[in-house]
Image 1 (cartoon, rainbow, N blue to C red):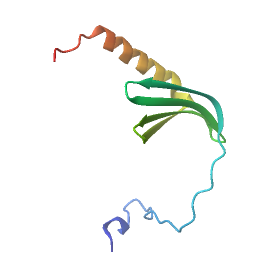
Image 2: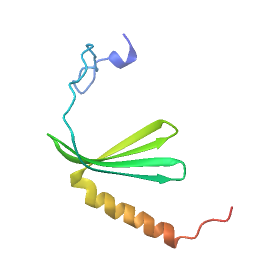
Image 3: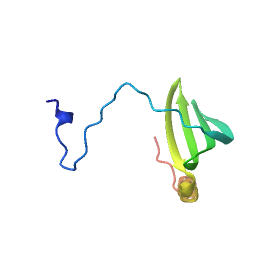
Length: 97
């Protein structure tokens, strides 16, 4: 038995792929914008699917992509946190290098 195939104490079965990919989810793009910061390209895309709206933030560095998705219900909290970080960055002096 492979270690990740042990019975779970929580009653869940280990993940098994039967060779059938998930069907694509229909997503509508509502708005999209890009910004380049130094050597990184960030793409912000507001999308909507049957489950709701969300913001997808994709970072592209030399062809390598990382993405985070924020549900629309969390956008105000996310904005507040980013605003706090921008304010802190402006107020806290940088360390001498």
